[in-house]
Length: 471
Image (tube, rainbow, N blue to C red; front, side, top):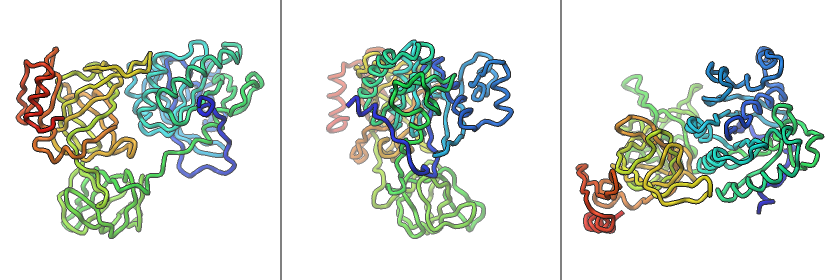
């Protein structure tokens, strides 16, 4: 199976699909992410004259200057914010996100991974696999990035040692397997000198696999969701006059045509028009930003969802989700949060179930998540909400968690399981077992009152009595 993970990726014979491949670079601090992208832009002829001059302005080439846009980044020689760049090769076009390696900027790395088709995870050949390497790889896997390319960088500083590469590759193969990455490749390179980036190098002639550019050219883009059930989150209601009411947004999944019957706001209606900048459309697919009008007046607002009438997401008040804690406060027991999915916001309590141990790769029982921690939580929502599994739809299956007291984004979440039947239960999502401050367990009732001072067994018995079969 390890051999399958590290198989050679074939070079495409034909031009690649029209949609650019979106990928990110990530990894630990000073692994050479910005230098790699800058050198790749240089080798593919994607830099303008002034950018090339800036790279050479210090005497020795500094390829990271093509990415470091903030003054603080240039002063410290680090990446802080996500830098997006567009470039192309003879076979394909790309959009790359250069993400920071520092632990405190993990939230920026997660932002880059959220829309990526592939990830280039850098590893310093001298240092090997570090904790931040494992953290970023775990986030890549959680975010559903289909392809991971591990780039063992700075091979020139270890004498292009095939033995050292083999040691690191074995550890990365085990990491990829443990996280369930479907497609993973490990390759050696030297970003500063350009060896094995866009061209093969005699110094690495012992490696029979592709160059980094060849591997990127062969990556399959994200699955086409145009054939999936319709999901259209409303971002804005357009009401320019008394005769027009349109619902604006980007189609997250599916295809829509005038005359299609859709579900919206608890009602059924037909699509009357699909309005775009150039005029009305006969059809719109996933990824298209459009304005939809309906054949009847329905009260929809930002955050509502227009979906397939025969396959809408069922409202749920209880979900299980993987969380990446992004704020210093982490995820604490008994705290109240807001689940924000697109334009939808609903109150919730989060009960942490487990946390991922980055050193061992095992999930261990936990009650809280520290900043930059990764774990599973059960969310009890204040009201039934339409959500999809993240594996089915990255847009309607993801959310951010906002602390109601600090008004800060504390976590990114990916829905893994939905209790679709709980919305029909009396009080679903409003009576839930929670962990309160300290060691006490308790219940939260519909009016927000807490019952505390009981152990977990008693709390669960009380919950079963209030809500039938419990949570």
